[in-house]
Image (cartoon, rainbow, N blue to C red; front, side, top):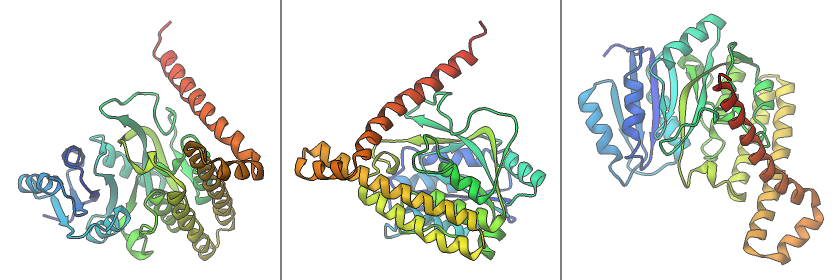
Length: 323
């Protein structure tokens, strides 16, 4: 097969129920010059067999089978090294993409002279994809974001941070600047790779049109963010400070420092919340007295979340009501 225009890198560990849908969504793209590189991270279910069957049907599918479980960031880095296309796209093994996404993103990148582009995301719970549950609201104009603008819209206290975006990046940018995922952090890995790519490529362009469908399943990292996960997240976030200095982006460096402080507060709140859940009053009470604002923040976050999604549901319902 000739060198593809887009290499779609898929990491999969025990995704037999979903990986077929993910790979097929890439294969049916309107842009045909595509390869799908699936890195099976030592699955113990039938994930590998599903991908092998797809590869036997379509030579554009390549399976990289790992004998040891290395974790998603390391698996994605292996996929980046294997990619041969002019562009590299990231697709999780339980997600899928719209059939025109990559052609539209490349056209968007060329129109704006961009090296990093992404499509709006829609959350999926099981088989349900509620129209109000999108990362960005509907709009006509694409977002053009510098590194500092992206970081400011990816703070940990945002209801819908842009750090969830899955990018399409020029491969020469990945190669020339050795852009890789931070293998120490399995939660905030998308944020880190996007900051690295934007710093190297100049800016990120995001279309408000939904093209990526993000499936949230029980037990995902998104739904199990405890103190330990947050500590790794903070370490990976702190590591970006030096990169901002390397590129001479002081505004981005200041924004990363602010985000690190926010993550530290998240760690303290998570520790307090865990102590309260467990009834460990000897631990919880001193923490609450030392940081009384954390108690209010936990209560407000719960209430804010309910109000936020209620407003979004109501707004979309009104948009669909001709009366």
